[in-house]
Length: 483
Image 1 (spheres, rainbow, N blue to C red):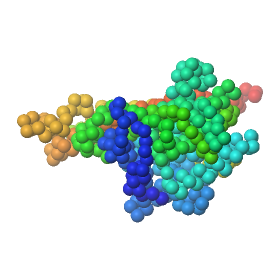
Image 2 (image 1 turned 90 degrees about the vertical axis):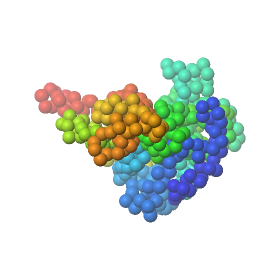
Image 3 (image 1 turned 180 degrees about the horizontal axis):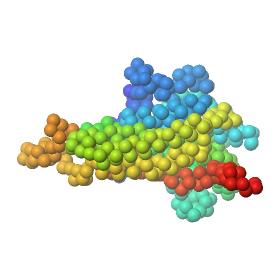
Image 4 (image 1 turned 45 degrees about the vertical axis):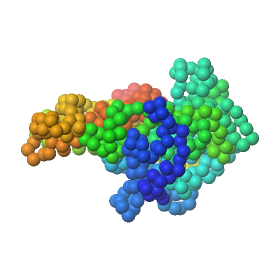
């Protein structure tokens, strides 16, 4: 397995065509806006280093069912309910460790979904996708690679199917078939950790009909393949990172990352293709991936841990921690946070074995888990802002604090409880700001709402998965109505 430093070194070998703020980025590893996000991915390697973090060995590593070797859990195919449970627990640990998005869940979920769907396609159509996929998986495990799972297309007019769009490129699709592979064109949106990844794994974004078969494709490529263009997304307060670790940043170590990814006539060799026009399995791949990825939002409980801790510190630093209404708000935050985690664990504990041998989470509870995540972090953030007070929106900068003329006023008037350095109070308030209003809110709030599908997607799946007839029969039996 790679160490955190070996991962960083491997990223230096990648040659992305990357643009940010209208300019091409030559050095993505040491770019101050990108490095905090890369540090998050590095943490997934760091916590797996047994000599440094032996307490996380069982969570962060697993045994490959292909080779019997110890591997990073992010490269693992779930072989038991215990694997599913450890995935949820790992997400919370890393969320609390980084206070941000650590970016490897999407790739892990894509690998697991493809391990099942390639098998199912082979059974029905007599294809050889599963063997091809397992060969690829072994490469990912042997090299301990970061995979970026790419599902969301631009979609254009949402009322039209992929094949009905005025511009066919608004969904990623095949434009040419060659003896040795295919050529694809289109884009993927909102790609978490895209330029921190070694590989990009593309999947359909929705169920398809026969007319959409050119869009029913899944494949994997090295993330710096020629023709793949990355356009870096903006976040609130992102340029604060340019100044380096300072009081204004909030989270001085870690951060998130999203990109628009363009495929400008990119060649994909056949050995990297895992679905090709099997439109009847596009929806199945989406649903299996989505169930896994909705479980993955246990990470928000980890970030919630950080925000609850910061809120408690802010209250202590300003002398309000003993007030009954503050204690009630902290308890409300804990209740919401633990409810999110409980649902993620529930869908794992209720998981089952699929025909391929891979274990899949319970889809109903996975969707309930994610629907909670579209609401509870916003309530937690609201309570955190309430406790922190208006300073999170009006506080002067670090440069003002250190200014020879006005710094003394800031140090004097931002003083809270005696014995607490004013700088400590500023730091913790900036962290609350970061997680609820700044660049950290992109991970904690916007991603909670739209990542793994917006709320209506979960509501639709909950409706499909719920056995209302069973509930009606229970009611009939108890009140004496004949079935």
